[in-house]
Length: 409
Image (cartoon, rainbow, N blue to C red):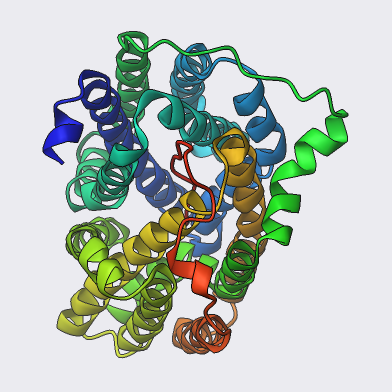
């Protein structure tokens, strides 16, 4: 970690991304709470993240773009475009709630582009020896900042409305663009294979299909995400029906989840070193299933403990998945492998968000939590049931830089 922080470009980039994460986390939760306040509907609130997830479905195109243009100017342009798009939320109000959904769709598309470009940029910017630490920092920033950013977003929304939340997120995108612009790295021009467009776009998913460890990871993620998207809607009902609190109380639960994420970030690498990436993934899934069961009684101390476990589980799953992908993917395919995994998990996740938004209106949220626990446990059983190959703990791709991959949560 000292070597990472001694790297000037790493400090700049990771600092900019951490600031951007604060704005992102504050906005996502605040927009859901805002829609809940405006409409009184948990389903309408859950559909905010559904719209965002639909934008991520453009990942095959964004992944190809990230592998085919210089990533530094692409990231600058994408962050500035995201800042401008977020400001359009200021036009939404009680009579224009619908406007939030297309804006969040565009927000999701730009998020996918930024993630794929980041995957490719890190492989060029950092030596392979520092990529693990960089990914850990990004994960802890993405999840750990939920300790403060949800409270910040929900608090600003409750005190002053959505305007300061929107301006905060737009400002962090501008700062992130500035951090990328200040990098001193020299980025080589991307190579072109000369293959047809269709072959280029599908190269990532074809590589996953031909790599057993990645194929197993993908199937496991799909099974879990068939129900994991319920978490975008169920907490609203948990807060209102189970805990009998105002919608803004969800900000406190998200902060507790962030505390669990920080603990998960600290513990992930030691656990993985003593076991394997696959063991960490299975443990993460079992922990998430247990968290679902603990949320059912709606007793506040137990709910708090469950949110800690859920934050820990999300970070463990993401770190395990990132490391597994890094060790199995050549650098020139990372953008497209990242995009392929993004789209492959976004489809079931998006479907489960929409299904959860519909079911929560007619089905007791406690039953949905029980179903989630069972399905997530099944995904852990599938992952654990496959025989681990000797190569699962040895780099299959050597001598090449690697970077991060987009994840759940």
